[in-house]
Length: 273
Image (cartoon, rainbow, N blue to C red; front, side, top):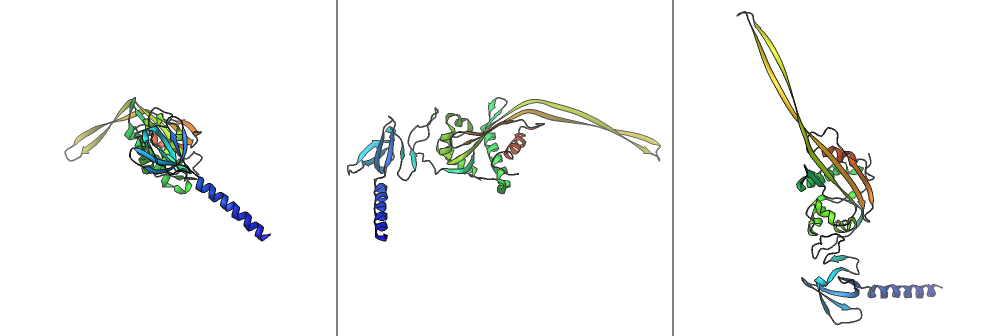
């Protein structure tokens, strides 16, 4: 009986070993063709490969390849594969996907109808650092915001508006995170309110038998803004987990959106009060 089991295990091992040896890299051509090969070299402008069971080396221009999936599971992108109109930078390599990690994307920021990308980056950093103030309350880990920005830049995405050209499934692959936090902040100047007040003080000089009255006036002004925060969370498959709007109360500065982000952060499925 023991001998029979050993023989069975031997052949099972041989089977899996043979499958592992026969595992191939896959090259996806821009014409839609997919070929199973062994990639030999990835050079600046060409890819060298052999067909399975052959030693003859073949060379193909990178322009003719959309991506390679190596037998290890790693993907390497070479030309446009996005559903949007913008292409990803050549030679971009997808990082390993961490399905239970969140990535905070840059927020779109529009002030008085004009794009303000730097403030969108500030909102991204604020949200991330606010999460990190009480990390024990997060039910998932979050990717460092600098890593997120670096991976987006390497893919050719330099500001929040560029995200519109991609499906969220593609963005998840680019940053390597299974949960994506994003949104849009709109701030419009409404008005400035002014108010004034005055006071007077009376002093009596008994020696000189004089009475003097001093008066002073004060004026203050306060700006008012119409602020709206559109807040969304997606999973790696592009499904919306959160899609809400929030208007902060009494917006007196253009960065009062932070109160709305703080409120929304505490009500996501990934934060414990």
